[in-house]
Image (cartoon, rainbow, N blue to C red; front, side):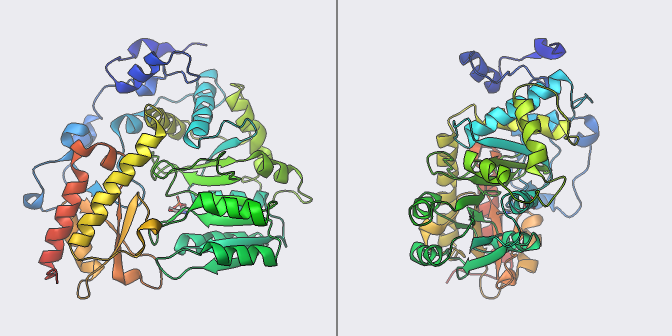
Amino acid sequence: MPRPNINHINPSRSISNAANSNPSSRLSLISRHLVDQQPLNTPYTTERLPNTIDTSLLPKTTSRKMSSQPEHPTLLIPGPIEFDDAVLHSMSHYSESHVGPAFVATFGETLSMLRKLFQTTDPASQPFVISGSGTLGWDLVAANLVEAGDDVLVLSTGYFSDGFADCLGVYGAKVTEIKAPVGQRPQLPEIERALSEKKYKVLTVTHVDTSTGVLSELKKLSELVHRVSPDTLVIVDGVCSVACEEIAFDEWKLDGVVTASQKAIGCPAGLSISMFSGRAIQTLKNRKTPPSSYFGSLKNWLPIMQNYEAKKPSYFATPSPQLVHALHTALTQILTRPVSERFAKHREASDRIKKAVADLGLKQLAANPDDQAHGMTAIYLPENVKGTELLPKLGSRGVVFAGGIHKEVAAKYIRFGHMGVSVLEPERGHVEKALKALEDGLAECGYQKA
Ligand SMILES: *Cc1c(COP(=O)(O)O)cnc(C)c1O
């Protein structure tokens, strides 16, 4: 099939190098969007700094040399995250038919790459990429794997786990929640007790609850579920963990992981990305009632995804070619290196950040190091400092953190997202800039370490 811009490949890019070293790769790396070397459109680069930034406070190291994007506050919230230029460039792909061979090939490769990211080689595993945000993943689970009246056990580590529970309830699931105190996670013995008291069709767990920065331990949890209640599907909300925390889909016998494009994957928001096991797909096929959503029906999407991966045109609802191109680029970059290396780098950066936070005399919501996420840190503010006072001070230093969202403690903490290029490319200086801004911003608020 014609892919007219093949001659634009620039072998100096690491992506292309990786492709050259692995010619048998299923992934064709000839896509135009990987090789566009032009700087971003001039209208962007002439854009002025937002006037809320006090440029005299900006550190000398800026992200300029790593990026041709206009100077902007460094976005260090738990998603969306800073983008790589090539990912952003992919969005300016010319318009093409969503059933044309070039786009079908790009979509198909994207699905195949997701198998690698999720570490599944089981042909029964099924990836889905559907327009929508991370929340759509909850609806997919609720509308397709649960029928009205089914029992679901939700492990709650914060706001997002509770949202998943609400969503399941909307579709008629009978939800039982095990809620951990803020900053903790439900413990295996209480989960075992719940599983032996009642038969649950589905168990959901939030790998990283972005409201608390609490990391759940999936491997041991899945072992427990398979031992105590082997028919229960293990479903993971991985919106804030896929591509920054280890997830071994096959090895850990997971049945579903739902995620989104804009967090650790580092792609603009707008894609719901999920992986379901053969068992989950069988559960879908065995339903007595139809899926309780139309756009969100995986029965409607399953043949489409299978066709795309087989490079056959197929239509149920129009995908976003531009976002799929961006995701293709992001995944190609991610898979240039072993995923284990990516996880290790997030872990190292996280350790450094958490140590710096402790050195400032600050505590995290997740007190136990084993429960701490590696792509973000939820930090309690000192007694006399308000988030509404500190966050603008960080902003004037060119750093954007997020406020608290867990309703029990929302005003008492802030969130620092450290995923993707901000930690994988230390040359950008993002982490140092953020830690310095935090220290100086706190001092300006009158905080002195005890
Ligand atoms: C961000 C997030 C969501 C929601 O994703 P949206 O893209 O905002 O819809 C769900 N779960 C977790 C764990 C998240 O971090």
